[in-house]
Image (cartoon, rainbow over all chains, first blue to last red; front, side, top):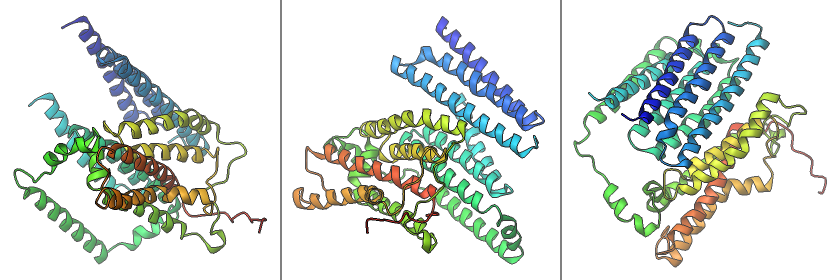
Length: 96
Length: 318
């Protein structure tokens, strides 16, 4: 097993951990805003670490760039949706 | 059992679970969310079956655009929902359940009775692929081998828009659907639309262009372009055009029209209805596809925008 493999396993493993933690938070946290907070961990760190782990395995620089672009697009979509959901929760007045 | 097999079985269970959850969900909005998740899981299943083209279409149209359409419908039905649920009780409810069970049983029987080696046209389709000049057999099937079907599918989309428009009240006929452009658009959504739309347009055109040789094509590319227009309209940075606008109607029919003209010219120049001239097939196919992308990118947002809801602007020139 090479050093690159070890790096990939560590990064992807850490990413999976953040996804797991985010999912547990989504299921267990009491109110909508805290659940959103848990989800952002999966989006940002979880996917970010998985992309980081996959980068050295990309076939070409273009494929690596595509991986980064996917991560950036998910960041954009996740941040926007979290804002919109958070605003809807606040307008409704109930954080249930 | 290998890791991939375990993942596949897990994925299949997840699809079943989400399907059941969607059926038993209380309320149309929850069911729609379940349906969108179901579509995304299905596109993962298609990827595992090495059908990347189908996976792209499922994610873009099956899950994405249909999801937006259903959420719009659920929002419009919000008031009527509880009343409808009460009306389906007693015998009609039992009959509906029996009918659904029968259909499921019939489908299951068909799947179980499949021959061990299914009939396949795959070898023939690969054998004639060089004649089309394309590298992606799915695009060859869609635009060359069964071109007539694909053309008629585009006609169905146009008919769907005509159907949606005819729901308009008489005084709104020819007017614009959806909300007017906002003076101060919702900042978060406007930011997303402004950042995403240029990227999405680039990706949509790229998916169409690589579709000739790799997974992708007119449907998927057109659906991504459509999504960009939908998001810009949702952010209310722009408003839907008037349904009587000539350019809009021309864009709606451009795809099927160019397709039909190409098909008829095939009968004259290439010796068969929807035949392409030998050695010249790929440019013709890409030309047809470009207009199909345009039509799809206009048709889907018009379906989402719904029937005209504003009075047409008075034409003072007459």
